[in-house]
Image (cartoon, rainbow, N blue to C red; front, side, top):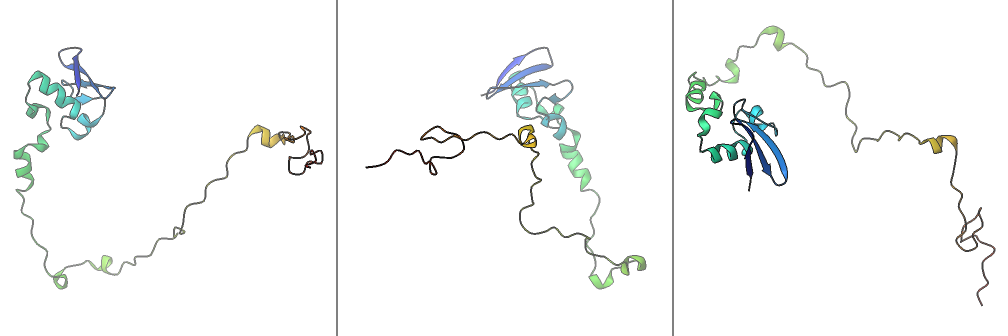
Length: 150
């Protein structure tokens, strides 16, 4: 459920699933970007139009209206003749089409090596200590100070 809160006569704040969107009916914009990009009301603008009981026709681009759609198909589209009857210009007919210069290698692309940290560049390493005796320089497996098992 979208909550619509008016700010001014044309600007509204629409809350949808915890996210807030600003809709301006005068400029036909929404902060989600769909209203201005597609030039038809987005879901947030629809919520505002529904709350104000407005018709969406005035907020849609003329491209979506029936007159514009019919005008697009007003120009006849003629079918192409058989391939043998096509007229192809000579410079196009003999133009050599070459394959791409580089072929993409198969498999996953190799990653760039990661940049080393300051610690790695300076050669500083942490000192490991044995978990059995606590002395540095070896680990538990190679510990000589291990208690004897009886």
